[in-house]
Length: 195
Image 1 (tube, rainbow, N blue to C red):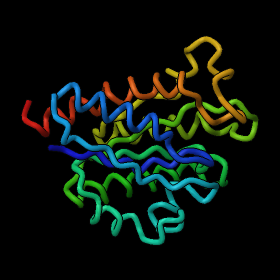
Image 2: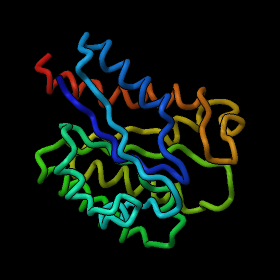
Image 3: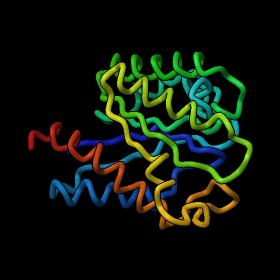
């Protein structure tokens, strides 16, 4: 049995329950193990940024290290960048928060995974591509698994038509995200299970 905790915090909303359920079903099916569970510990809203999550100011009420101590999962996925790009923190600050996130997860004996957010269709996030690049660079620098969603979602014809209010993905985009997540998290789960 293995658990996968998601520390996702996507812009102004939580990860779709359907997306989390679909990934859990894929992971269970791939290993023929219904004991594999996926927990969604995301906090929504504009306060949801990586800095706020680490400090416990994202609605959770506790610093990230305290939450990690309660998560019974060997894999912890983080998806922050949309609100970080919006909040005015510098790329250097954001890179430092990514390093702290990875250090905290590793210190808890868990496997950190970074996941790019999908793109948004509004004009309020002009710096988002630079934050995606910072996340990708941090994953490479620290040797952490990375789920690439940003360019992948954009490569699908008409992707913006699948975004409610310019940033809420629909079931079509969510199914594409799940495939990307499974491609990265699936092998980690198999390794943990000794398969």
